[in-house]
Length: 77
Length: 188
Image 1 (cartoon, each protein chain N blue to C red):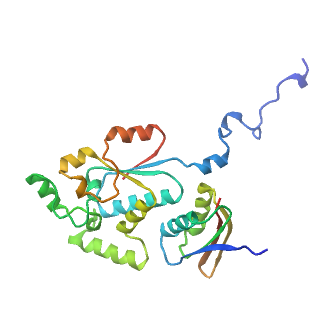
Image 2 (image 1 turned 120 degrees about the vertical axis):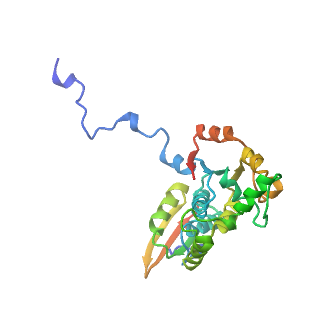
């Protein structure tokens, strides 16, 4: 079953800490279990999103990179 | 006594009970430590660091408080205020270093404002949020800003001089109490 994305955040081009800040704000608008997709180009994103997920308890469902664009799918806890 | 009855020799791969986490991992995840930033300095670069850490802390689910004292408090005076204070010396102080988040100077390479202007240009080019933008976000995200009462008195600052959304002015005892209760402290 393909993952159903409830909301998307385009953080491409933004520098630290804005991708994480925008993600935290967007997650607040979701209900538990819904998925958020984030696109970013900040090279620190991979580590930062893993850390954010671990600290906040929102699951990092997918983490990938393609052509310099990092893609993260997060599930609201 | 037979060898089998003796207690087993501890080996390196045996768990050490005293080092086991007192609470399950997921409880740590659910409630990170509170963060307490003591915003003491008023320079642009340090203001930026304070704002980045405050917004990120809030984004990570931590309760973030920022205690504003000495030069750090000047950053939280409304941008449009030019001269603050009641007496001549207080007014001179504000004239020598204009208060407000948009008027911060660099501690090095200020060059009459050339440095901060270049920093601003670079920040725009690399889409780095400005201290002012980050400050507004921090307030939106529930970061608590606590002005230092003593600094307000010394510089003759009034509540109406300060940005809207500031918390109640407090003193050092409030800061120390938060630290003893386990807030992670940062002095910037």
